[in-house]
Length: 338
Ligand SMILES: [Zn+2]
Image (cartoon, rainbow, N blue to C red; front, side, top):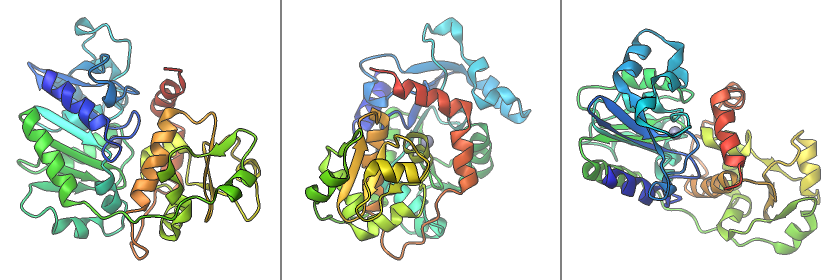
């Protein structure tokens, strides 16, 4: 268990692997699956309790009988083993359907840069050859993703790429799960482009009303690299983008102020406004989760090429994420002052 928490903390501190409260980890022992609680941060695994015990057999029975309780898995928490007043991860079922003892689910940037393409399965074949892997097309996280995973698992599958979402690896030890995660990320690694720096004069002119120049220099690549900008303008590439930044991006028109651009798009106080060619402006109310997802967008888009067939989430996929109680709960934890 200590090894698991150390791994969670290490992965959680790497923005190319985990962003904000995303991703999760689990360990099965004596019929109990200890899984990350919804809204907690893997980076904090060694500072505060983040794991919640679940009756794993009950989850699997629930999935087999289409029990609606699988949507949150809350009724399956072993409250006799925990004082933690939190819900289990939205992605608990994904951990339950993998038979291995240790499951690690990450929003690995290198994986997402391929998983968000319409020809992801073909592109994964060569780099992942020799591994026992499977690809699951996009399904909203939750019980339906757990079921879709179960349908795609073959005997011994221990690497699952989730379309437009991320990576799952499983093993019978923490060490082996950590090794496999690193190997897959390395096999899928793409070289990020270096972007021109921000145009601070143009950004200052568009700032104000709560919007200020993004304080992490690498964020500006979303606006200053033309390929990154056009990729970001395609739409939402993965679920946590929608949950923490809203659908797609708001891009200002020439000489338009950020606040006006957000209003024109019907989005008051959107965390991120992109000023094409100049850089990004970030709203003062942007949560730490939102800021982590801005970095993620810069990291993913800087790995995409101009001719990559990007396949963003549909408007329906976005609406499902935004009107879902389980995600509203995770957003409310992110908004809480820490
Ligand atoms: Zn996920």
